[in-house]
Image (tube, rainbow, N blue to C red):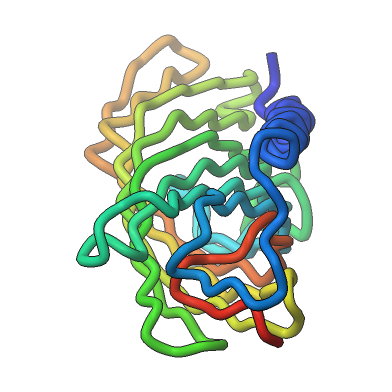
Length: 216
C-alpha cells in the first residue's frame, strides 16, 4: 500500500481524536487561564515540501501532513514537550537532474519540543523515527527500496490567529545502506544516505496551550 494513503488515514485519525477531545473536555470560560485548563492540544497541519533525494542530485517537491499532540497535565518543567506524526509524499516538481519517475515517501513519528517562551513565536526541535520508500528505474528495471529512518530537525511556528499557526520546518533524514541490482544482476551497495529539506505550511490547533491565556 502506497504511503500516500497515510495522508487520508492521518486526517481521519486526527478528526476522530479532535471530536473525542471536544466531547470529554468541558469548554473553558473566557476568564480561565491556560494554567488551569485541562484540555490537551491537538494540531493538524499540511505543507509544501522541497527535499534533496537520497539517490540523485537535485530536488523533489511534494506534500506533508502533521499531527502534533501536547498534554496540559505535564509538570511545568516539561511544558513544550509533545508528540508528532508525519506523512510525506515527494513525487512532483522534479529537477532536471532527477529521474522523471523517482519517488520518495515516508511516515514517521517521535518527540517534539516547542519552546513556549514567546506568545506568538515558538521555535521547536524534534527527533523522529520513520519508514521510507524509494521507487525509481535502475538500468531499465523498476527498483523499490524500503528502509527504517532516523530523523532530526526543527523550525518555527508563528501564530496568526487564535487557532492557526504557520510553520517553517527543516528536517534531515538518515537512510541505512542502500543496494541496487543492475540489469546483469550485479548488486552494488551504497553506504548510508542522507536527505534533507524544508516544508512551509500551516496548522490548526484544537485546544489552547497551558502557556497561553484565553484572552486574545
